[in-house]
Image (tube, rainbow, N blue to C red; front, side, top):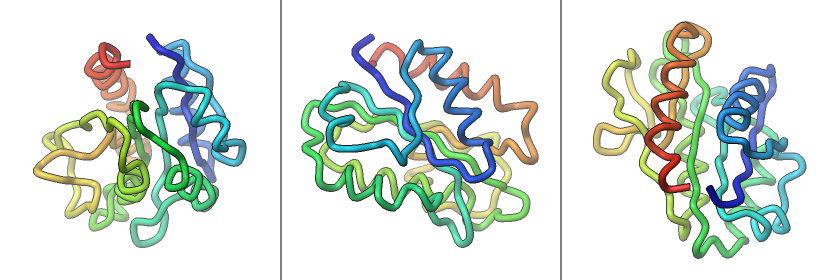
Length: 162
């Protein structure tokens, strides 16, 4: 595996915990998006980016500066993988919508495919394109019993490209 970093934005600790789990399983460094910079992008081949979703499908607050870092960086030759946390029961019409903002900001990178929306219960999400999330979507509020299995299956599907 090439040099990989997991970057997360977390308000309640859920996304941070998931980022640490992913980092542990891949043997990758994990950093808070508040420490994310152009230097980070330059120093890593693979960027695994994670956000929780707030309000009407928005990114976690700390990510707004991080999105600017992504947009300003040369992502040519970089592989980007996304994961997000949401609440499909309370926010079923914007479930994991923050993922789409990260996806759009990473334009120019090799963005690995996400997971199928099959098996998820939600009404709508900007993060679904052609029946597939643009990254790994997790509902640790209502389906925490599925989180570990979803992470493991997703890692299995991406690790060959990292």
